[in-house]
Image (cartoon, rainbow, N blue to C red; front, side, top):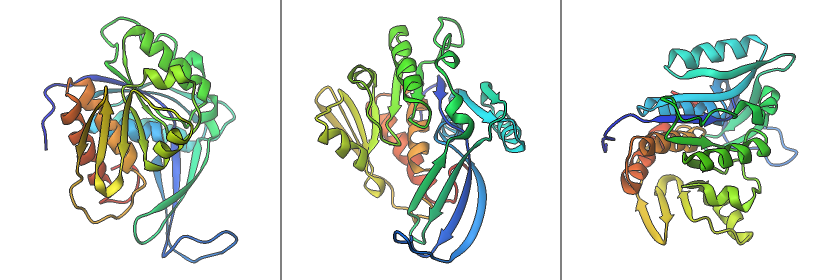
Length: 281
């Protein structure tokens, strides 16, 4: 694997969920019931998944988000802290459950997901204020996804751009965002379906990474495209692949890696993630 030269700081603003995972032979059609072969619980949420991946890739990682005032929330915060993640920005939302994701995984490792936001819906623009102040803890990269309110995402992107902090924006799950927010991302990260939705709207980001599953990923920036093939792996569960990719990408960029090196690191992390169950190692 390509070695990234130094550790950088990554700030992640996003969701924390408890994943309830059912394993099936095949996904049900609308209105159909199928028998599951296993049921499990795991830690997830795109924000926390990406924070775990960034920390595992060597970044000094801070997470901003919300958990509920339930047993799951307290246990989750303790778990992330045990992994060396700064959770001072993860607040407990009174009277709200921790977010939940209902995940169905088939024998080919393909998944479908329903997310119930819970406490994630309480993340506010105030949680972001002060995050980019010029001090020793200022991040080199801020990484965002779309499982918190879109006005929070837009506020954070604009604040980071104004402070000269690099923005990595994962447009998942897909939603429309203002043009200035998309333009500030370097890069915007989308899978092939999300990239097609952007193209259908006539949106052409100036810096766009497209993840292509087992075919690797590409990064087009300033008219130049870099492509990296994925190593061959036996898929077990694709749930955490995109988040592992994004976290590792942000860590590499924060460490000063160039476009090709950062993409190579990210593809390797995403490929490793599909070889095990769950969204976090």
